[in-house]
Length: 195
Image (cartoon, rainbow, N blue to C red; front, side):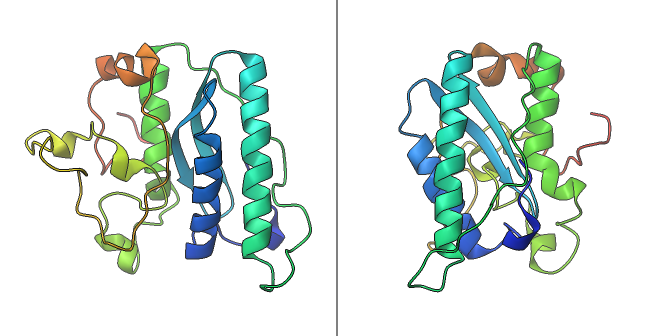
């Protein structure tokens, strides 16, 4: 989903918190589940599971309303909420039907910051995983193969001040296991390049 230009970059702490609150609201739904999310400067990528088309439509509607309300509050002056459009257009749906498509989609959503070269300057150049995504919660990075994480609550070291985005673990076979038929995904992958 594209963000209206007047909103500015989503890759700011207050925007991150606003979107995190929206994912918490969405996490309360049973028939619609956000599995991964990635915040870019001017758009959001979501990977969701829904039990049917109506659950998808209602879940997305609820998420968009919650996200817009939270973003407008964050952009307000502390007394009054900002008014105006937050999302420039409607979300676009791509139904994932094959393990290959699932592999590419997960790789794209979690690595989209590398595609946009957000990882090449300043502090982000020291990060392995994008903190503006759910990559920190993804247990299947190839980099974690030789690092058993069962004894730790998180796969990566997390600062005490960092609150990860709230999402569901995938329940569908294709997003939980099927994508692995196409190989592992590296945190260093750049979407747009072949696997």
